[in-house]
Image (cartoon, rainbow, N blue to C red):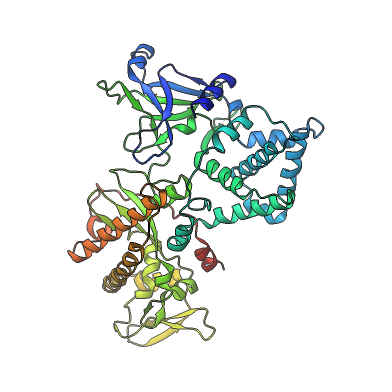
Length: 503
């Protein structure tokens, strides 16, 4: 990548400070990746005494790839040149197909645009030059990103076999859409690997860059943008020492080193920014292809193994079928602390998991639900204050209100939680045995890191169960106002959850 970096600095308006270098990263586990470094000896001769930040990189908008690039293509006359005419024709065809409308967003259009440029670059009829073509050929197409959706990695079969519940279905579906579209437009050619490479490279490198809404307003919006050289800066929340912003005068994108916490004893350090303030590990694996290390609280949005759910029965009810009928996604959040792991029991999604195990009938031999005659829904069995049982068709929100909504339902919640913990303990035994038999192809792969992280989490939960230590966040820290629980959304569904959650 050294040659690509030099070309970009010589042939685009991108500027780099004298104290900044770009070379192979020193981050643990970052095999073959690149990073940005700052030389503090040189920095001290360049910065002002009262400066709180220092400019390391400046990237004008003309040296980026965003929706602006695509709008320019669509606005140009097809008579200007053959390349423009071809790309515009293919883009217009993609946008015109109603089956594609659900997939049209800025990031996906950038992917389509670059896939088309890459295909035309292979065609000797067209001669593609300029910054975007160089960046595509020398950076994006030469970067292998092992996202779970990348079917051209050596662990692709293992992702499908052991982690199908974590495969991002919208990603998979969009890649399939592109493959079908390109196959129809370029008959007899197979571009599946190229499409996968471009998609994974773009997804992992694209940044949300602020843009002004106009000259007469202070409002901003964010636009997905590929920013050369800035995309070499790695993520580390524990060692973050830089951030990027826009220069309001020029609209350039600027990487700033933060000078407040500079260690005067070191000569050089790697530059780090934050990709996300809270690290949700499934998101990082799906988008960036790695798991960050941190001493801060991290989150794993854990999805139960469908093989276990589909064969396990609780009081005669198939767990997988129940959650499907109730439109419950069988996932929960594991909060990873330095010395323990806890389950986030403060979110609605966790309450939805508990519905099946409700003990409000006060009889462990009785189940709170009854399968309908059509086999596609469950009726809830309720008991009034006189002990009379009635059967009602309730959705998951109504079940939460009926079972756990009142103050006098605390006893039921505690009994229900006990049942869930018993279920979870059995699950951990099943899952641990299943994944322990995996024959790892590489000790340094993204798949291996993900597998090892799950092993560690399951072992931690099992150890806490066996030593009678609390595994629920609220039960342990709910009354401690100093400890804040991180808030993160669940990642997009796998195809299993997508099918189950469809109305």
